[in-house]
Image 1 (tube, rainbow, N blue to C red):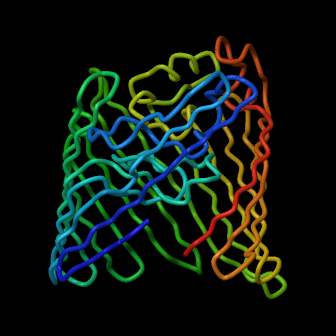
Image 2 (cartoon, one colour):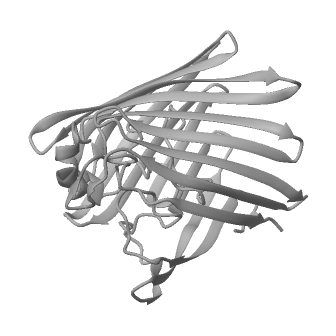
Length: 335
């Protein structure tokens, strides 16, 4: 990563390599383990080598140029854009969603777009974005504008435009009370002749337990693009929304629960669970992190699917039941 700047101009650069080794075929039931969507319009990614059990790809995840003044910012190129209100399950975000089951991506993937942000006041913002994406259904346009303002403990936002060529609009709000943040977002989308409702609500709060910080997050998502039952999962796997990379989860009704606790200044514990309320399956993801140095973080954890397995991708018994047991470890160095 690099962020060079000269006067009002700045650039954002990030280059990534992904080497995936597998003893079996890819599973559609877990995250891409760091590899983002390939729908982007600019030819800034590709496959270096591939085989039966290994794939080596690379990608410029950021390649953007910005011009900033006292009250506005213009950015063109591959950049991270997020209009989400909730933290994990963000169906009303019209750009690349964050994958909650990906242990290696700590930030959202970049998208190819032109963006203008205007700041009328210290607590308000007007944001407009134009994106071109090459999807399996052809080249699609996303063009939308959003307004956001804060008043005391309330932050509210609304956006409207077209998302992958579909008319859409959304509202979002965050309210802080009793030391907790209450969040919600709701999108209405006209897609393939029907109106799709996508939304999420959540709450997050920090507590002091034995002199350490315990942070809890709970969110519920209702996604009209998701499967209402296990029998509907195969159709959702190959749906246009899934092919465009819009789905964080495949179920219609999902819950995300996370707890993080700093048991020692350098050691943290985390427990994340994704629960499909329609088929009763869950993905459990406990993890631990260690700050091994001022510029080195080590992390390890597991993914465990719970629920009916069925016949894998042919006739899955549930969303998370067929997920393979996965053990991972990572080291992040900053220099």
